[in-house]
Amino acid sequence: MIDQGRPLPITRQAQLLGLSRGSVYYEPVGTSEGDLALMAAMDDIHMKLPFYGSRRIRNELLDRGFTVGRGHVATLMRTMGMEALSPKRRLSAPAPGHKIFPYLLRGMNITHAGQVWCADVTYLPMARGFCYLVAVMDWASRRVLSWRLSNTLDASFCIEALQEALERYDAPEIFNTDQGAQFTSEGFTGMLTSRGVRISMDGRGRWLDNVFIERLWRSVKYEEVYLKAYESIPEARRELAAYFNFYNMRRRHQGLKDRTPDAIYWATLQTERTAA
Image (cartoon, rainbow, N blue to C red):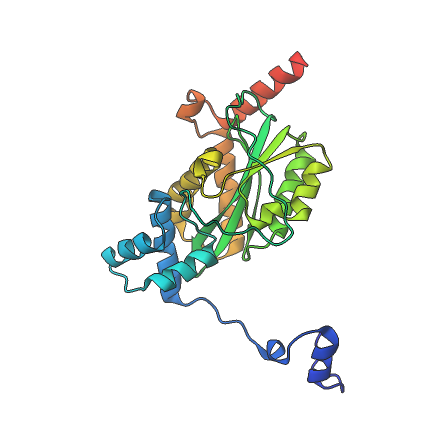
């Protein structure tokens, strides 16, 4: 790494490391308070109106008293990993070299825990910044198996969450995600294929293909995140751990006939193992 205390000129050190000289002196600028407020409002709009693109979100922000252009909204949407959930004629390309897998769940009867897992990433606003949350969920029971927080949208925290889930539970038959670069990365897909897990990926812009984890995000944000405005990632991690314990063990779901994810997970897992 660059060491400004060495006699070798910084320019030469940068050349040896394959870095531009300008990048050595660059100091990242934090997100402004104005943009953080915009991003929090955009997140709320996206949760309520996930089919809104940059134009409609900009108009909704104007109605809420923000002064912002569509171009800036589009830039913030990219920063947040936010995309209008609707079919598109021209689709954004996945990361170069990443393999895209077909969607395997259409028409499939998902009846028991461990049959299908899914994962997704969402943006979380905090009092003085933001972070990203990934969760791995069992499809049939809605049980959250693992999760991680990160201040960047790279693949590493998604891989960590997957690794924890695979270490704690038997691998599923199928794993479903969207086509995000985090989930198409070799590190993520390789961990699944090495365990014989079949990989399924949503069609671009088809939020219904992973609908249960989209509903999880709505619950997490309206029942936890928006109520607390975390001051830091350690605080967010502590509070979310308590929430996910509540979600798994105590929060009853109408779609599960008013039972908890834990109850459905262990009951259907035991049933399938007994039958096997």
